[in-house]
Amino acid sequence: MSYADPACAYCPSTVRACRKGEAEDRGPGFCPSKVDPATQDIAHALYDDPETRKIAQQSALVESEGYCKWTRVEEIVQFSKRMGYKKIGIANCISFVDHAYTLTGILESHGFQVVSVACKNGNIPKEEMGIADSQKIHPGHFEGICNPVSQAELLNAHGCEFNVVMGLCIGHDSLLFKYAKAPTTVLVAKDRVLGHNPVAALNLADSYYSRLWGPDKPAKPPKLPPAGRKGSKG
Ligand code: SF4
Image (tube, rainbow, N blue to C red; front, side):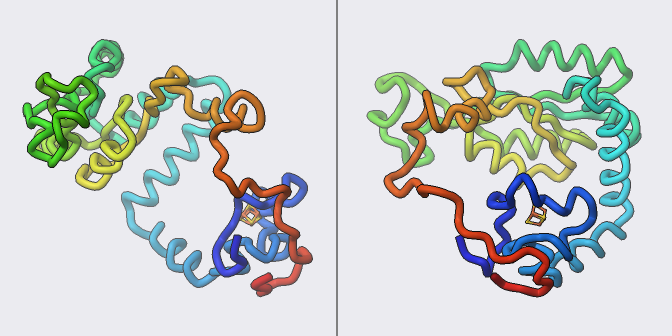
């Protein structure tokens, strides 16, 4: 860890002063409020953009009204209604077509138009991306590459105002985010081992999933600089 960079991950549970608006006073030396307040100010100003402000407001209201009551599917419906979206895109993994069907029905039942595109659309062979036959999941057979750029472009071209990702692979989801023009949320984060519940690996990182650690597992968290040193770089 460097005290030159923000490191909220190391903030002790007894501090986390930003919850109470006290980060500038009580935040550790690696707190963003200490390390880089100038960038925080730049980000703060970006909320003057009307769309950014509306998303920030409505997501906060969905959070508070549905807190521990609404599933994420319900949150997507409520958020989309409050934002005034009419047309929603689904970018799903080919293994999630049935889930996309259910989500499409739910969204349509609330009056939305829905566009859905599966990852394998476009029929691009993996070989075209420089992947050898021996590197496929099933060598000797056709394997189409996942095509998130096309998913994004199709959702863009068909007027989607908000997109929902369902089970895209690591990296493929990154390309979807890169090319999608509309705001995009994740309903399902793919984890083929953990039933699409990737946080389980972190919950069990010191027991069943200890294999996650590299060779330099830290023995203990880094020593904290004194709290309350405004402007300290630690
Ligand atoms: S108090 Fe500062 S360092 Fe701690 S979690 Fe909040 S922003 Fe991060």
